[in-house]
Image 1 (cartoon, rainbow, N blue to C red):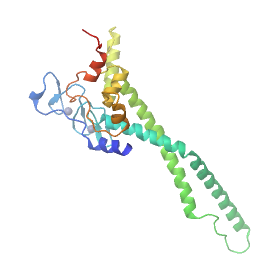
Image 2: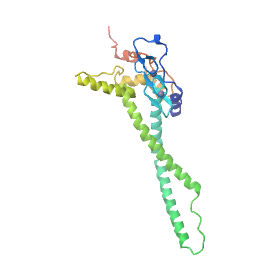
Image 3: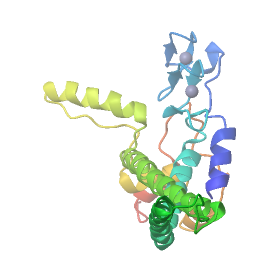
Image 4: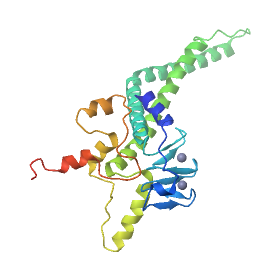
Length: 250
Ligand SMILES: [Zn+2]
Ligand SMILES: [Zn+2]
């Protein structure tokens, strides 16, 4: 799952708006591209072009995270965090043993040198452990520290993105909406995010879960299904409208 989502996140283009002016009506114009800029689209200064539903430019993926690869990015972060947590917990005993072994080696080395200093003839006894043993234990300590650090750092990033997805916002919209909320609050008005359908539906739309079976086939297994819509206009997806329509409506 980690490799699949990482590969898909770096190879899938985030989605770009069409360059032709006549294709879209009633949208703003990007001042840098001099081209139509649909809703939720933002200009990436690193890619030097507009990106549909841009979230952020990710230096680790060397790709922009936008409409078509947002899910791959999030799933990669989530599975990578879960993998690191799993390895940190299951490797804890191994880490402690390796750490203790290094401490023991340090002690033995100290004793060896002390013994050599007390001797009258010039001969130091050989070390009690091999270079290989020492490198092995040091590698385990290094791996565990690296693994648990990634689990913490990536875990925090994943939680932050999970909160954004719950609210139906991208990283960029988070800043825009915050300003807008404050601006309207001063006028005594309430701000409403037009792209949020409620926490549960935001997750279903983000992950592309139309029917319950998709939780298995599209979330827990690798899936290349496309996100809802083209990223050019933002109509409410059918899976959300269906859920909110009463079955017995006349
Ligand atoms: Zn642009
Ligand atoms: Zn970019």
